[in-house]
Image (tube, rainbow, N blue to C red; front, side, top):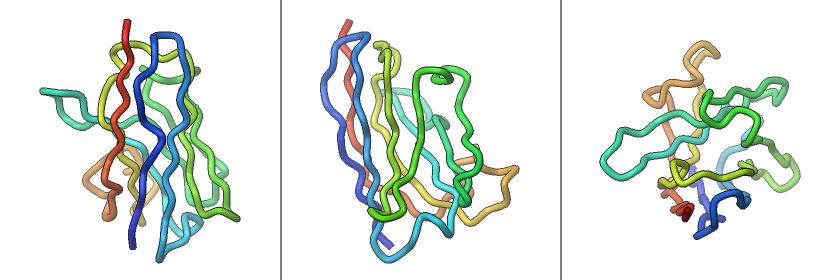
Length: 124
């Protein structure tokens, strides 16, 4: 399976970006999908996740109300809409898929397949 993340870039604080994660070889409907990020000098952290049924979404407190995860089944693509961006959102963003149980959806260790990452830089 291959995951291709895209959509990163440079944006001013308060701006928006939409990240995309396209999958080949697997359907997102069979997996929980997560977005994680890693800032320079920091550990990778959970950002958002979508249950395989798409009936539930999960967010880190730091992005709740600003970020939205969604899925287009026809395109087999998962999106992360990021609004009201802050400089502290600057990081490399990764998408990943997991067949783990729901209670582990925020745990990066259970995600078996990862995209290559896309850089988001938010200037102040």
